[in-house]
Image (cartoon, rainbow, N blue to C red):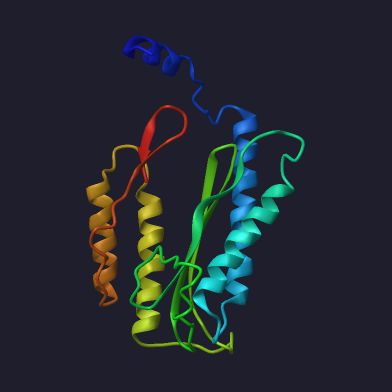
Length: 204
């Protein structure tokens, strides 16, 4: 196929647009799957649980929930991003091989969970950070509480700054400023991205 023919094919492709109710519904379905799978994983993440088992639980849950949506349509759906369980010093996206059972959650671990689902290629991701404990009523102080608060308020500030005219550099600076208030450091090498759905990109 020539370059011209490839360009013609690309121009004929329909870009998913949020003005299309079907696109919105598929995004909502993917988000529902991701949120429900996230809740299942968080509830199961108790002291003594093997990390790779939690990853498998998240992936299995996404797959099973996906089977129940748009069942009469022949579309792809399921895992868009593998379930990752990242305790303490592991900054994120830790999804070990099935044979690696070396990492086990302990009381007081700071755990980050992230995963993603898709319906017809339309992706929803979800993440949550929490302290692994056998006593959900227990309150934590010190560095663990500081980093959780820093992440929460930095995220809230970044969300409010996601509007036309703002740059990713400005948002990154706010994140660093909030982290400094809590005596924490923002992770290096983690970049913001531009997300395109309707053909126009906006920074996230």
